[in-house]
Length: 338
Image (cartoon, rainbow, N blue to C red; front, side):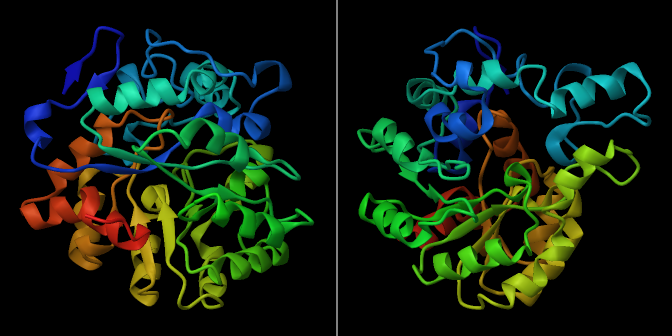
């Protein structure tokens, strides 16, 4: 990897120049601000100089960086330590969160994609109750050929079907679910009802999935309960209700990667987007599930796009596996023309 003049990592272009890379998991300010940012901080800022690595809302940076662990980071052994307090501050969005998300503009994403050898990006909104972040996001992305947009609908919205139809007319290629942001269990009846409606569109559905912290790190209950909403133990009964839908597990299950593989082997209609996964977990998924069901993703701007690129390169031996993960599989489920 190389370090840019503004302090972010990029992959050496020579390593990936023969691949087309589609990032299946990115965000921009307009698609997430109303749900994730206080009202005073919802306008995007055009800033090409701030380092997303230094100001990341996640703590996997500096001396805590570890490419052999999920989320590319070590975790503190105890909550009651300086390191533990730093992690809690990051998870509560008190360090780097607002500044990073406000600077995730379309112009910044386009620049960073070019610098980072990424050709196209799936842009995912996160919509709160009775919000229209999808439409707001589309006003910023519709003039770019590099972006593939998804829609987001809150499970408790009263006009779900109207939004589904309108977003499809506006050109979305799939839908995003966010259990931990909504603080709604994945198997909540309202969310299951929404998933069934989305499945009828025949468009892919991507959901945040898996526990984000290792078992040994004991979080405060109010954070733990929020993260438990997407525990993979809650997914099997729901997936049984949508046997033919194209369903994508975001983040490769994070700390529950082995459980993810178990579910993918039970449900052949599922895929895994591999952002946050180290190379050894990707290698295991290739062996036990197959590279034809894995999708490259980064969760930009939370994570640097070069990290998952490096993880894929380290995990793969054959060109066909790299091409499948970087773009071929995404093109298939998004029905993109060559």
